[in-house]
Length: 410
Image 1: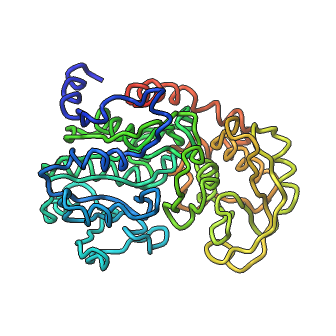
Image 2: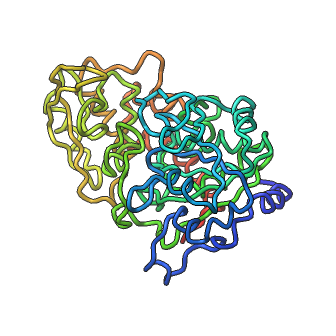
């Protein structure tokens, strides 16, 4: 990136003073989310501002009070609007749905629908809400195709167009921030499951992503503040924080789901079930006609940190609804060693080799999920797991170099 752009970015992304430095070693004894640090400051970064907040059911305190309810009841905050993403502010909608425009019964606040809105259309919503500052607080799961990070991107762009300030309240990446993994999106495959060229598992927090978006992808940076966590370390999984897990979406019931999701969500691009309609979405995979040969083939790959169990299940909705199907259940036994994206590719390779009815979704959704045609075409050509994974290493190394400039925690 050009030096002049970096100079501009530095002015546009000045972090609020109470959170401007990454956590120290001593601070690890006192872990706080971005919202907890905001509240501890007496909401100083929001003083004198009419505030709107982009959030969903994950925007909660440790005692599971929603931050909208907390801020609405606090006279130090002038909260004027809520903006709901996919699944809605209160989380009543399934995948691909939202709650629309309504007034929240609990607070009386107007709730605006942001889902699938971007650019000037979303800027007009921010303008109509009459807020000065847009705050973002949603729990991410670490995968490029999880749409909340693109809600973040779209809202940042729209806030800039509307002349609004933007504040991100940080939360842990539940699957750690140790490293970026997987293929990088090619721009011609940009959709709402991937707006910009980042890796499939990005290994960043939402505040770090906001800085990356501002510095690399927005034509003109938004006026950005980030309220950081205290005490987060990049190698920590979600359970290290003793925070309540609120499902960010209906099919993300546990942190275990998030652990596998950046790899097994690729099965959305096939005719196999990705486990929707079961109690273990993205951990259970299968189809009619599959049997124990798939689990055996997957185990033979020797993928690090994971075992595969022959499994049979009957989804209550989505693919194969009400039918008993065969497949695998993923059992991660060594989380630090586990590579979800390599695992997802290995499962695709072995599924295609052991099940004669294997097929990609007709719309080539797999290309949107992986960010190019490469994974699909290589698997179709008979490539093995290592060969497919090797195909994206150069672009991944390039992304890691860019990513390093925007990391906020040691």
